[in-house]
Amino acid sequence: MYRRLFILIEGVDDGGFFNRIIKPIFEEKYDYVGLWEHAQKSPKATRTFINNINAMSSDDLVADYVYAIDINAAPCVTYRKQEKQNKLRNIDNEKIIVAVREIESWYLAGLDDACSKKCRIPAFKTTDTITKEQFNNLIPKKFDSSRIDFLQEILKYFQVEIAKQKNKSFSYFLERHDCD
Image 1 (spheres, rainbow, N blue to C red):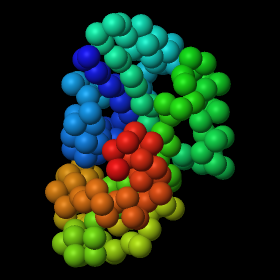
Image 2: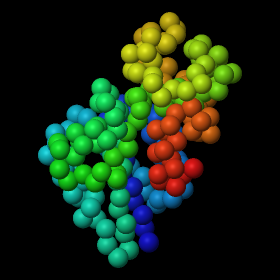
Image 3: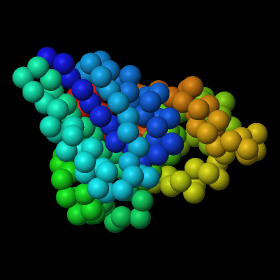
């Protein structure tokens, strides 16, 4: 049985994280793991993509997807999922994974105290409440010209086990997909 997984991500920041951290984890369970950015796509294009994934499955192929989003200003995960279901209509609630607060909180979650020091940022016991704005304020001066370079620097030191301890939504994501 050939197994394919498509991870629908919001954008470039998510792409770096999912490509470097999440994709290798899922490649242990799937024959193919692909990333697809949905933030700049129309709801119709995203619905079509999801329909195509659902139509792929056959006797010798299983195709599945995960739809990753940030909670942003939504009051709770359930509300954020409902927003996406109302907009896309064909998305399975169980396939939606919400990063709390935002993907930047997942980046920071993987740093232990020593690695935080190497990156010249404060160490956090938990990153569940970190917003994009708070993250941006932590970026050291040497990375002023490139936020992407700073994100990549963090990923050099990222530790999955540490991240599971520091961020509930990251831990839930891995547990939900039997990757803990």
